[in-house]
Length: 195
DNA sequence: AGTTGGATGGTCT
DNA sequence: GACCATCCAACTG
Picture 1 (cartoon, chains in turn purple, blue, cyan):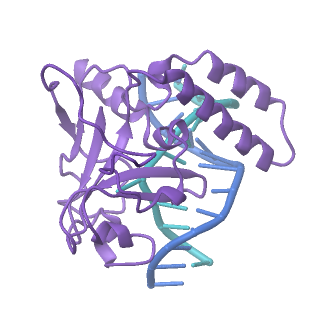
Picture 2 (tube, chains in turn orange, red, green; picture 1 turned 180 degrees about the vertical axis):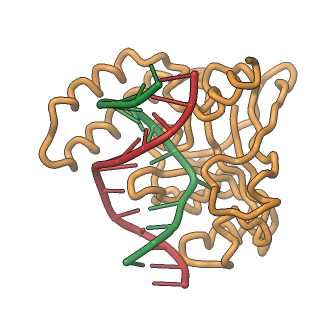
């Protein structure tokens, strides 16, 4: 329900801006493939490569609304949290509280952010390069059986303060306005517009 | 309601 | 050695 477009090597907000590297290599490859990277040392983000070989464009998946499988997503979120606790030394008293809160989190909020999408679907760098259009793939895109496409709103991309204009302000974040599963950053923005 | 800072490690200069 | 397509708790007012 929320994505961002990264438009190619000339897009100075894109990981592709400095050309092909080991990290962003799959972006330069075939479309329909997953580009997964690690941010801030602890979070993963999922992108879908969108253009032909040699043109490094991709869509960042920023939020997903659970339609079914919410319980599996919650389990994956809890496993992610537990791994995180296990790697933290020493464990703190807040750890138990975090798990309790996750247990009562509304399903609509389980994947309400780019890193949460990866946590809820157990996506990490091992999924980098996976063919999302292969029906036999564990991680894949499927055609939605909705009657009509939802309304779409736009805004500038999040977390790219390093990018110069015009890239900084390009309205290349697309989302379903009012959807309960939007990222907190986008939900906040919608509130401001409403006021 | 808005701002700040800490966790944490791969990638690139 | 700086930077980072994040998240959340703990602040401030």
